[in-house]
Image: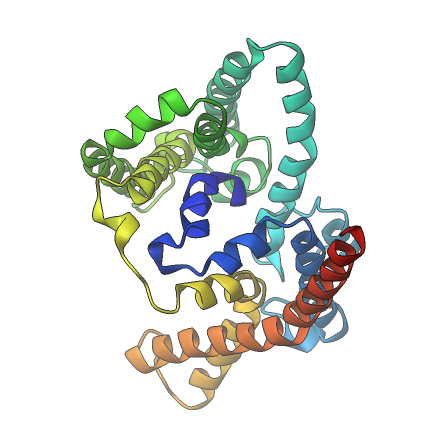
Amino acid sequence: MPETVTPLRSQTRRGALGVDPRFQDRERQPGLDLLRALAIIVVLAIYIFLPSWREYPEMYPSWKFLLSVQNIGLHGGTAFSHAWSLAVEDQFYLTLPLILILISRWPRAALIIPCVIVVGGIALRALLAYQNPAEDVGVSYRGFQTWIYYPTWTRLDPLVFGVALAAIEKFRPQWWQPLINYAPWLWLPGLALITYGLYLGEGEYLTVAAAIWQFPLIALGMAALLVCAVSPRLFFRRVKIPGAAFIASIAYSAYLIQKLVIDFVAQFCTTHNIAPTSAPALVSVEICVYAVATILFLAVERPFLQLRHRIARREQLSVQ
């Protein structure tokens, strides 16, 4: 989610991590939301008008995607199901200004609201996990998908960590500087939290502990690694990664198009007797996803991006 990487973006704006500063400027501009909406509409149109291309025959009504409520009541085994995270993002951006208005009028809410969200999220997942038991042991996977994995209300507490880091960096620099100075001591606990969170999800059945704790543990570990990535005391900030800006540019398109491409490659492998888990199949999937994502980016996002830049430049000249 974009709100979880704001401190990292402040570093990419200065050219750290090998990312072109122009990419940072572009992504911070409000017009990018329109470009993303256009990309979503293009991919959604493919799913609607070319049903034979879908990875699954069943698909939720198009109005749910357009209103960004597709994640509510969602279950796996449906086409374009990965758009659920986009719905969570849109709903988050809808509620965040209201929360910020409340915080501006009641400063104590800056501490109370995050604590309530974190504790409430853990408690809510615990309640839902116990209300959706599996027939044998653990949590029902279908119930977990519908009530815990996809809905927004069980995903808010992991977002708090990223939002908190962004708020500290922006409004509490006296807290931010000591925090990034502690980075050398954070990367190992961060990796440990992520590893343990992933370990909870392993096994033959879904445990109650995994349903409750996996999301916040991984999010907290990622937040720790984010601090490490922007800290001048570690080498991550100084590493130049060739091509990082381009990969970041097409990442959104790759996310949108991935399942269509994966399904095409899987059908090709089946037809030509290629094991889907073989190295050639896995490499082909990666290459094809990025190739199609590049086409989508160049055909949809980039032309409108260039048009917006020209309009913005004219407005600046007219003001001067």
